[in-house]
Image (tube, rainbow, N blue to C red; front, top):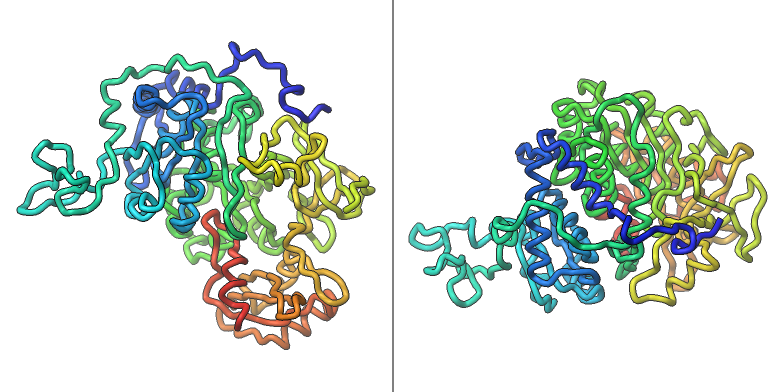
Length: 552
């Protein structure tokens, strides 16, 4: 198989239809169907959403947005955020999501590095916009809806607008002296045509720059092209004969919930938006909205299992709970199978490679060493090999570095050819993950290569130790991370959320771990916490744990 996308897929630019265009066509063909439910309960039809998105695309084009322009989105889980991403894509722009949870200085560095020409801000992120704008120099800043100056009360009972009705007082502020963010681009687009713009998008044009989670410093920008992303829309989606999907987008649209929303809308379904993940609200929405599809990271799945409302929630509408993004506990996954039934789908992928493998509900009896669940078998057209550190291919059953080759690989890290060369060689991507295959071709993950803790006598993979610790009756949640001392020696630290009524002690856990796994796995330090901090994408924030707990 040839891995280079340009060699693998012989697409005619004139015949290529981008993913945003496909999604809007699907919506336009069935204008009366429900498409979106906002966090405030507003229902938006497919026709309404498509028309507004087409108008926004024309407005962006009129303002100079074209192929090669970077449009950055400072947005939350809103209909406007989805519309803006599609509209920018229809115009040919390269789209960048500015993730919630990152600091203003980090976001400012991203905005500058990706050559942002237009910044779009929605109501969910108005509060953080001034701090970011003070650190950047973006040519055009626009709001997706009335800006804060238009919705706040001005002095003497006015609405805060200036004499000219623009919302500004002539000094770039609203009637309250608050800095205005920018013009409402949705209002400005109202007179534009509600039809697809005539912009030719090719399979090799830039689609987006996605950034890594940012838990280890300034995140890397991952450049994706239209062609590879478009290919996902040709694959089957969802259970057969199950009716139109109803997706609950309770995690950030800037991450995988956005991808799932794209596929759901294209395949005739609807998306219910929530501002953020709250386990009680998720369970209520599943019952109220008859949700069929849900995407969660494993720590969020555990929050659902631990919520007191789970036992009285009607979960019968669920057809698929997709989970992945970080290591999962076999103990908790078995518990989830009992609670939710045969609806779990394990997905293994990464921004650099899109989807790699999948474990269907019917395959969740596939377990490996220590009862670990597989992450499934590679998708068709995806080549996966396990290599040793010297690059040689390892035999079945032997763990090593996972390398992937497919037509869906990233184009590279934005403006970082050095980093690109480190992971992309001869068409193969080194994922940085450790794993192995069983004799039937099922893939298992051991850990992230960079998360390996080097201790005296060997090494510790955090996920292995976490899996063990979660079998201890005194532990509800945990995270394992390495901490270096003054002599650069690494030590195993464990952050634990105790089970109700329990108070685990370090020596007890050391004895438990030593008995079950061996002395080198025994933790050097135990930190009891009310909750495990998560990153903006819902993964355990081990950098924060390391920074805040190492001294203790």
